[in-house]
Length: 67
Image (cartoon, rainbow, N blue to C red; front, side, top):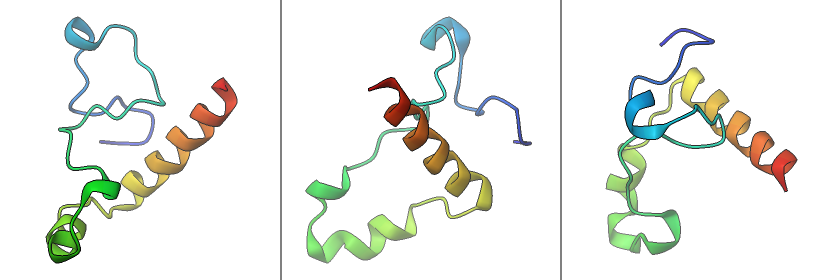
């Protein structure tokens, strides 16, 4: 995915109009529900690429502007 492209998981037929504040990937266990023994494997499943990190901040900013 290049900068400015839609996420690969986004499908306009399923999701409707694109919302930059929404995560379109496969849902995982929320951080608040992760058990201490499972924390290592939960962290290993995170996408740590620069684009993923930028997406987290972008979604956070968009959510903050909406409220």
